[in-house]
Amino acid sequence: MSELRLQIGWDEHWNKEIEHIQLPATPGVHEITETLDWWQPDGRFYVYRTRGEAKVRNDGRIDAKIEYHAEDNEEDVQDSVWGTLILSMQAEDYTGRCRYEPIDDEPFEREWRRIADVLPRDLRQKRIHKRHNQISRDARFRLAVLAEDRQCVITGEKMAAVLDAAHIIPAADAGADVIQNALTLRTDIHRLFDNEFFYIDPNGSIQINPSKWAVSRYYKNLLQGAKIDARAFERVRPALAELGS
Image (tube, one colour):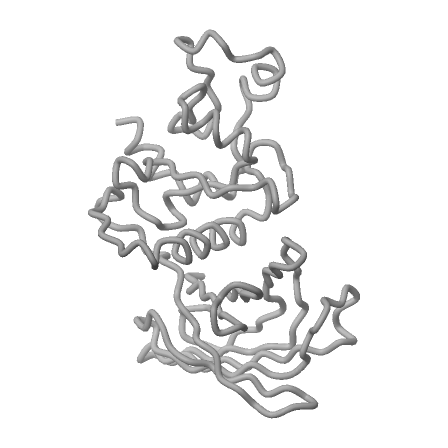
């Protein structure tokens, strides 16, 4: 099933709480059983169990209704507001407004933005950004990749504070900010990757760079012969193939 990935900024400045939602794109009625919430004060993700339904029409219109209930979620997040999310969009839309109806408060609207989820013909793109938009763009991109993998795809580390979004085709070489061109890596592993101490071959296997003699025994034992997570590999396979071509 093809899916659309959305981010919702629950605070107006997108700096406290961001919801990650995957919506189906194929016609029919589909159940939505969970969403993923990034909570900045704790620096971590929370999984919300939901009672949701998305109706996808043949013309591409999507109508989603997602209910959040305290009794469905054992792990409560501070300041959780239980209620119902209502969202309508066309499959080709990339931004819009959604409505949230709290159980014990007045309804309000928030902005949603679609995560780039269509692999460009060329994973290298011309990047022209205004500086004041770059920080928030980079932060949203990181959260999108972390939400996709939920852990370092090499070590399995799950602590969000030490996880980065690592471009496969480097940003310095105009690598695109799409989840098909990025993996979640532990911060130290990301630094080694960016400095070419190891590379990921087209089969998803880790290879130590023989020209980098300074790789410690610890990292050699950790990396040599390892493979990236299988689900992540399927997502980034075209980028790895292009990088290795």
